[in-house]
Length: 398
Image (cartoon, rainbow, N blue to C red; front, top):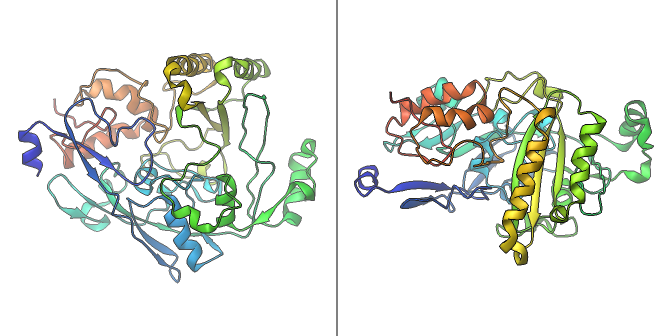
């Protein structure tokens, strides 16, 4: 098949189970074939050993549902939104509300199987530790360890959101009881005036429903691969930043003032606090490098409705100018970005999939110094760059 696609000049796109912010799993500007993993979606849960084998065509909702079928006290440190595909999510690092306690989803991978360009099925032992520690896009089956927790508590409805009404909403995710949380909040954040009425205790799986805005739905809603959360818009542009130093009040006021613009009526800006175990995991433990030194990550989500898609350039320009405005306040050399918030505006529009120098522009933002190690592995396992897209790892063929 490899020879057939090369002979006819076809590229490949690998589609897992969920979404893709830039559509690279199902769109290309050249003739292409989709390797669709939709039916590779089995989930096998081993409660006794707290291990699961999950095929990458599954969505997180299917994974979480199977865990909840067998246990009310086990969880996996994955993402909030249940429609996200397991394969891309984990291979891009993957973070969620448990990541300060248990790291990213990628940090919890124990083994993996993938098919390489020559049709070999490799696992951790056969691929070797160098490749296992840096597998990126070819993963077909992944496994993960579970983490134990008690309760989850939330403050208000949505994560650090600023919308057309210019509201600031705060959410806290706590593994414990209300009685444990209240004195801690009084000590650390007395200005919030938190009371027992502000807290809701629930299981981990209930927290997934809550954060998706579907808390009144039966658990089976997690198996619905096409369900769109009511808190999401159908069209959007995502950008991201990492913050190393506190942003001045003047800087924040400038950012928040942009939310009064007409095109920002469906914009959400999220601040994700760092710290905890993320400060103790080495930058080069996995390809995901954003660890110690970060105060928080920012996600800029500019959304619009279908009926206004004809004006999409107005929204895209707002996203670009806001991103430019934030440049003095965020990480530098490189200005870091989160891989799973794929942004094709980082780098060149030239689709030369083999140009190492072009790839370093976005590669160092996503992976920092791990980029060169990924290039080395790519050169070993796919020297002719069979698996590629606009922001895939290139081989070093000079």
